[in-house]
Structures are given as C-alpha cells and as structure tokens.
Amino acid sequence: RRSSRLDIMLRLTKTRALAACSRPLASKVAVRCLSKSSVEHANPNIRSSSDQLWYQFHNFWPVQVPLSMQMPGTPRAEEGVEAAEPVTQLTTLPNGVRVITESSWGVGASMAIFFGTGSRVETQVTHGSSHFLQHLAFKASVDKSHFMMTREIEMLGGHVAAGAGRDCIMYAGECLSADAPALFELMAESALKPRLEKLDVDNARALVFNDHQNQMKNGAGAVQEVLHAVAYQGQTLGASVMCDPHAAEMMQGSTIDKFLQETVSPSRVIVVGVGVEHARMLETVEKVFGEMASSSPAEPELATYYGGDMRMQGEPGQAHIAIALEGVACDDKDMLALATLQSMLGGGDQFSAGGPGKGLTSRIFRNVLSNPEVLTANCINVSYKDSGLFGVQATCDSQYADKTVKLLTQELSRLRKPFTEEEVSRAKNMTRSSLFLNLETKGIVCEDLGRQVLFYGKRRSGKEIADQINALTAADLSKAAQRVLATTPSVAAYGDTGFVPQYDEIAAMLQK
Image 1 (spheres, rainbow, N blue to C red):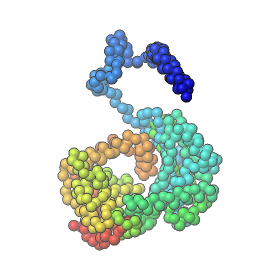
Image 2: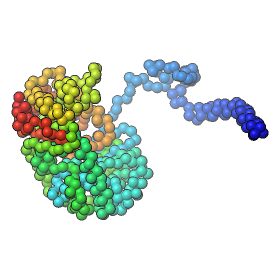
Image 3: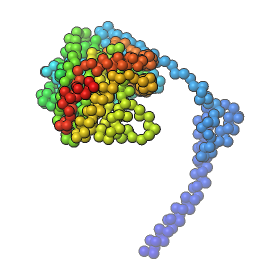
Image 4: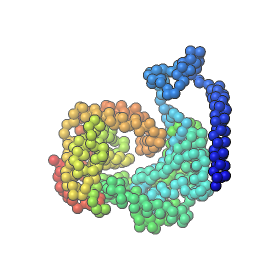
C-alpha cells in the first residue's frame, strides 16, 4: 500500500512539473499563432498609420470604445446607402403557366408553386383530396423514394413545406440562390408526380386522422371551420379543408389522381421566386412545366353567402364563439378599408392585455379583454377571390358565454358610430406598419406574390398599397362598416355551447 501511494505521489509531481515547463512554450506558440493570423487576416479598416495606432490603443479587453465613436475606415451611420427598389417581372409561358420573380437582398431564395385549386372545387367523390395532397408533398414521387427525396433536399440545405386551403394548394421551398434550380425541380416533381400507391396513401391517411384529432382540441381553429360551413352552407368556401374521417378512411390514390387531372391545368399554375434571377427561374420552369399539356377545367362555382347559426359540441369547460357578416372579395374597393377596421378593433388574449405603457389601445383590448371573463378575442377579416367574412371571435369559460357575446356584438354595433380622426390615423398607421413588417420576410413576400397573381392577375407593391391605405378617410371606413353590418349575420359556436345565446337574440343585439 505504501509503495502504491508513493507511485501516485511521484506521478502527480511529474505531471505538475511538465505542466509548468510547458506554459512558457504554449504562450510562445500562441503569440506566434496570433501574429501569423494578424498578418493573414489584416483589418480592412486600417488605411493609414493613424488608423493603426487607433486600433492598437483600443486593442485591450474589455473593450471600452463607446458605441457613439466612429471607428476609422467605417462609414458614418447617417451615410447609409438607400436600398434599391425590388424589381418584379412576370412572364406567361405559351401553355399558360405564369412565372413571377422579385429581386431581393441576401444570398437566400424563396420559391413557391401555386395550384389554383382547393377544397372549394372538391366534389362529393373527391372530397379530402387537397388535404391528402398536403401530406403527400415531399414524400415519395413516381421517380424517387421518400428517402431519396428527403436526402436530396437535405443535401441542398433546403427547407420545404406544403399547405392546402380553400382556394389554392401551395408548395414552398427556401435555399441558397445558387441551389434554387435544383430545389425547384424537386418541388415540381413532388407537386406534379406524387406517388399514389397504397402505402403512400395509408401514410398520408394517418397524418390526416392526426390533423382531425388536433383540430378537435384547437377550439379557435375548429370554430373557424364551423363559421365557414354556416356562412356558405357547406358549399364552395363552406367546404371544409379538413378531410372528413369517413372520407379519409375510403380515400384511394385513383381519387386523388382524378382530382389533380380535373382541377390542375397550366393556366392555374403560378410559380414564384424571390431572390432568384428571372432568366434562371424562367429557364428552370420551362424545363419542368413547359411540356405540361394545356387544358380547360371548369371554372369554380361562385361563392354565395347565406349566413345562419351552427353549434358544435366539443370539450366541456370553454366556449369558442365567432360572429361574422359578409365581408368583401380580394379585389373589392373596400378591402383595404376593412383591413384598417380590423386594426382598429384589434385583439389578443388576457396574458398580454394587462399592464400600463403597452400601447394596446385597440377597441377589443380596451372594451372586451378588460373583462377577465374573456380569455381571447380577435377581429376576423378573411377575403377570397369572390367573397369574404368580417366579424369577431372570442374564447371564454362556458358560463360567461352570454356576457362575452354581448361584448362582441357591442363592438360590431359601435362601428355604425362616427370614428375620431385620432383612431383612424392610428389604425392606418398600424395597418401600414404590419404590411411593411410582413414584407421583410422573403417567405411572406413569396406567398403574397403568388396570391396576388392568382386573385388579381398582377402585382401591387407594398408602397402602392400603403399609399392607398394612407388615403382612406373616416367616411370611407364608415361606408365599409355600414355595408358589412347590413348583411345577414353568421354565428358559430364550438365546445361547451349550452350558455351561448340564441341566434335571434344575437341578431337583435347587432341592430342596437
């Protein structure tokens, strides 16, 4: 035991001695490395001997240079270069596919493929096809397995997503601009040639069932589906985006293929690229979509707004309520006025409603969420190609449903009264600020380009829209509000709906 202890002590002594001897050597090596790196990576801001002295004088830790001091060789903050206006180009291929691109800063690219189809054009036979296509996206294709598709996207460093809605199906992707053509070809392959064998449909079926279960737990999303169903009586825009469980159980690949063949044509395909050169994008699109045969699918049936009342039982404890009226289409002259009214009404939840100095001056924050019984409340403003919905939505404990409905209807009824110049100015500023804030993100710009071409056939710039918002007056907002309030209300409730007032009572409240 004594010999083992002596061995351990001798080893520790040798280790400490070696460490002490190596310190001067390590410091010398570090100095050499630092001096070598300083030569290879010279400071680009050093242009004179005085600049060299300045950096040597301030080269100590912690750095004590104030943020207000200008470093030698760097431009002053007020001498920034004005950003160039983005260039937007739109080209239509001979077969009808439209390609729109917009220049952007940075080395990244955002792309999207829009199919002008969705749940509104589904029939009783093809119901749920859009939802299945969303989950079949970027899985297996006719020429690639799921593994190969995923692997090739990962090798490009790409990020992809797909979504299905009432009026369109979108396939989106982001990557470095240099890799944009390669990623786009994978996006197009997934969109045009998804593999529809039994295994693929079964995998998508499991995801569809999972979506249905999740929506049952998401009251705010479920009440939106109920609202559309009652507003349009289950037709056109009232057709649910979510596939019915029974239809999902019976779905087959041939049904999905039938839906694609009947509703997707070159004239309904829009390709968008942000941060990609137009010539490069056009060359890639022609390679992929150039041979797509032209066809003339039937035009979608125009949406007809009806209004009415629908309640759907869900989990007990909370009631999710939506009260809406007929809004306007995307290209309507009152569309921007309703968007400004949406900013004026505002919304949020109880968590962010309290506390001074937050600037939460919207009407719903001040008049609805100031009541602790209301958990969340928001303004609804949804526009489609031929119709829209405008109203309010809230979540509360079920026993306070009656009070919540009264508060919501009061806010809608108050839109009949004149607006003050202060709140009109504030609402316009909020709407313009939200517009430009969203247009800072390439993905949102990409989606905006696609939807504008889909609905308007052209691109309206953010500045153009902001100028139109700024030109709105209190009279314009009052006119739009009176137009909406003259329509038949739609009432939707989901969850514990036993305490929600009857439809006639709610309609009477709106007339006060």
